[in-house]
Length: 529
Image (cartoon, rainbow, N blue to C red; front, side, top):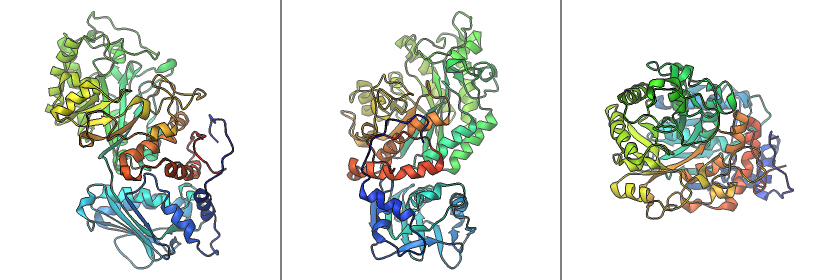
């Protein structure tokens, strides 16, 4: 039950969803119903490129004798899979290089190179399941698909009654876009390392491969910087509403980076500048033009703060921060924000980034930033992130003409902190209400006028936390919309179909219940009762 339930209405569950649930509860002595198993193969989110159910092939059944076979380079993914399957089944599921008998096999290298870095092939017969990919990233994506081919109870962390069946058939799959992201704002409200890890596990289920952490804003600085320690100890000491805030030590941040990497997710850290900097200005008086530190801020207004563009210490500060952050972050991008710098004049804005952008290059990193950053004419390796609410933007068109790739996060489509409707108890509504159909009903490849799909690097779903205080709040706003954005990023447009998606989404509900995900029961979706 959601902590914030929406008004329910009676809904007739589509036959395919009902059959899936019936199949999950089929006693082990019953004859296999191939129509049931086929329906589960066709309920994967994101929708695969190609699904070929085998109507006559029966099913593969996990038993106490099942093993997991893995190539040497696949061992980490195999152990991840075993850790998922052991609690609900109660089976040993030993991981080994090879063996005999029923098995789930993870194999590297023996696939069409056209599947790329994240593509995979999954085949299931009565004898076993085989996942093949060119890289561990592809195998991991295939494992997420396999999770959805098993009954919903596989998501439980305690032993459940089976049977544990996978429908026979073949899936060939690869992503549409290379960058499929989620953003979590840990500045407005602080989220503990365990809460961030929980979100990482949730987004990994839907083949999200980037987590953008918004680490600094007016309300809080959330990452330890050893050369400027008061940023965290003082600047991180509060949050919206005046709560205690918090910050990540560098060791905690490294641990988050490693935890995400094990799930094939790259963390992109953001330090917003030159605006959204009140927490830094409050921590160090010398960063202010007048030398006077402002008080800490716990409201939700934007656009009132700016680093002092003409002070040399500003650039020493930025250099130190970016240097420490780059050393902690193996990913190729540092996000510099650059949005809503309302009290920074445009000449000063350009002057500031003329000094800052080369710092990122010197650190061996690439620049990402909100699309206003285009005013500073970053190099063509930079990735501007479009968050506007219109489908045309001159800055974006100029950047594309120069050769930049654009990351799509239109606020009226992809912002997960927007309310579902006027009755949603959390979130904001400045960009409009976003129901599931709105989050699903746009094409990142054609959304911007004058921007071809070849200039789109991917899609990201930001989740701002002005009104969100804990994991329940995060889950209520992210689910069920995050899987919609994930499908836009992964699945070919040829598979895009609202009726199919809402049916497949309904089948995710029992999985989220097993996982304890506090999701919004949108009246647009025929959830099982």
